[in-house]
Image (cartoon, rainbow, N blue to C red; front, side):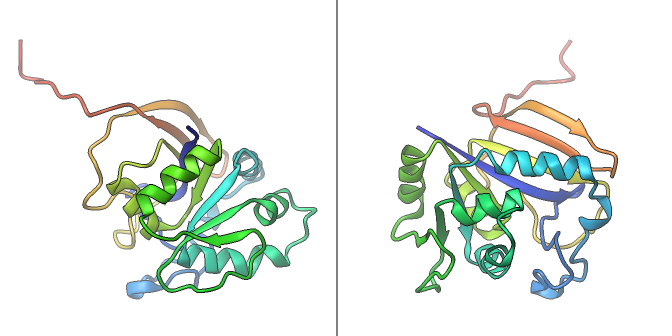
Length: 203
């Protein structure tokens, strides 16, 4: 069985909406698009590229697919990220899209949980980048094996968040952490079974 990793850029208060550009996702009047850019640096950019290179397949929601499909095919394959994303098998969870123009893309049909489980059997490393709505469904079905998180030092107080209502309570194990010159912190967590509880008042 392969692994499903969620790659996500988020603020300290868990907001994942529109990190890349002002008009990336203005849903619900979100006014803070492009919040990630001031914290980027060469070292963290290289690390992000390195992690993307590890994937065997990409699983996306409709909105992130539309953003990626409008941008990455136009970029030179001299860029490592463009080369990887353009060549990788891409699976899209959408009830509205009928056709997919980006090369190597296909729609997921039928039950999401069954389809994602099949993808994990077919591919060793399935990655979901962004796709906040899809990630909520993946969390509710307990399908995520690893969280690859890039956390930035700001709070926004509004916007789509990584962990929403309906997330299955899950214990996590920290397997990697590193801070970067621009202020970002990279945290990698593996799923570690059910949460454990104790009593801090017990003698």
